[in-house]
Length: 312
Image 1 (cartoon, helix red, strand yellow):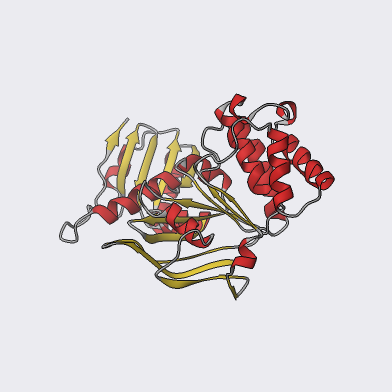
Image 2 (image 1 turned 90 degrees about the vertical axis):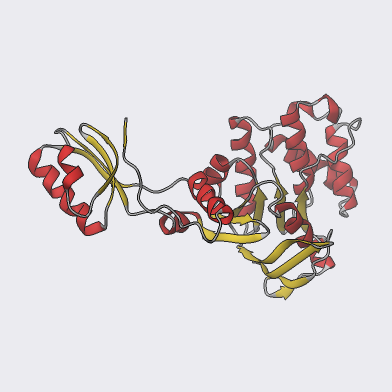
């Protein structure tokens, strides 16, 4: 497990990381999300030793992280760093050779990985002849070719179409299944929600939330339910303990504690057949928006607590 504790970093008078701490567990894909300038790339560069930290500790499997361990890390920066005129297979083979593989093993590893990533037909193409999406796949191959023990990927899904995302995900999941910790940043919250096991949210250089994805959805969800009935649900507006958020004849979205929600369900069943009744969990984009909104809200401005009803 990769563990960060109390990481701080300033550039001049500006503190860009403030007491950053989270873990990246073995065998899991951890999504690292935050707005522009939130501190994601700075954090990743500190993990890799590209930048120094002002304070704090980083450990890997309980041991202080050192340069000899970082040599076994795989890193994909957001900026493209491949030689544009070099053929794809030659480029990835060369990088494998730099990590100590002999010529034959390097070429075999490069070819196998590029084929897994869907570039089998472009092995002899110069990098700058590839589409942006295929260049991204080649960049990912560069991070993986030496069989890393930890993966740090900055915006790996940028520019990929949905099919390419699935291809790359399959490769990353293969590494995770071997026990490799995988940390990736992304602005595509729908992609993060679909792909990751754990989520770390950073805003203003501070970690605002971290943990297992479904646990975060439960933590940040209001006690909200939706119900679809064969009868009119207008009576729900006057039900004690219920705050209606959306209403449309036989459909209602409402806030209530669990006991009240069960009372509503029994009343609805007595009145008409019920087609659907379920708790509603927020999407990652909603959680992120709420966390960032809380970050930006002035302390002397009380948060609104009563949702407004909408009719659709």
